Amino acid sequence: MIPLELVREYERRMKSLRIGDTPLKRCSKIEKRLGVRRLHVKLEGENPTGTHKDRMALLITLDARRKGLDTVAAATCGNYGIALNYVCEKLGMTCIIYIPSEFEGTRNAEIAEAGGRLVRIDGSYEDAIRTCSRDCHENGWHDASPGGLSKEIGIYSYTFIAKEVAQSLGRRPDWVSVPVGNGTIMAGVWQGFNSMGMKPHMLGTSNNNAAIRGVVSKRRTPIAVPDMTLTHINDPLAGNYLPDAEDAIRAMLDSNGTGMEISDEEMVSASQILLEEENLEILPASASTLAGIMRLETKSHTFVSIATARGNLSSRRSRPRTGP
Image (cartoon, rainbow, N blue to C red; front, side, top):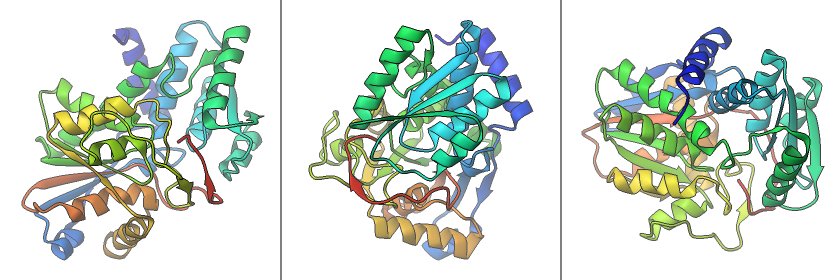
């Protein structure tokens, strides 16, 4: 259970920091192009750091402060680090980000310039999580790594996306397409709709991702992708170690939805369609949600694509890895 006072503080801080309440844009030109009845895109890139990660970072940091802690630490390979650092700076707290040594995300410079502390760890994403957890325990810091002690809070932070979608539409959408990385946002959006008595079909999209591979293989458990190669396109989504994989799989299957493996080429193409038709600059990995909708046989429904990040947030060199 999430304490009510924490939820209320979260709602207040979202307004003051302009996190959440992102636009839901109807894409009439793409509707005509694809023959889709109704298509809306939820523009999470309008959050302050350009991604949905601001939502989770804020709620977890507020929980740390509520517990009397002034330092938040997390292992991350992506945009969560800049989001966590942004929120900590606004709340007057210290942020420490643990990164696998082989990772060279360009946003690391932003974290350092903003006063965040970067700790490079020799090894994998899992090694970074373990080291972060150990240091948090020894130093009395709040462990904000995905899937850790803040797992339920992280998932809950994304329930607000579902509530905003339902409020904007005035009804339940038929299909909601969500990119799957760690699995947290899929689990949170599904939980949000369930809390309102709504059960849209949840469509998960990804590339080289164990949770999606599990759904595609008709399993209820993640299946590791052998010889996985990270590219600058699939980087935000690829991974074999996914903290909230099982929750994401349950969301897709319990909603009578599905999962789809979307190629890099399909992601880029969908991103180009969004730019050409609607003047929306969306990160290709986020545009995978549109690519998934394009693959569905059914077209006579109301579809919502959750675009989790705006375009050109980072550029990463291709390399193998096991973590998201």
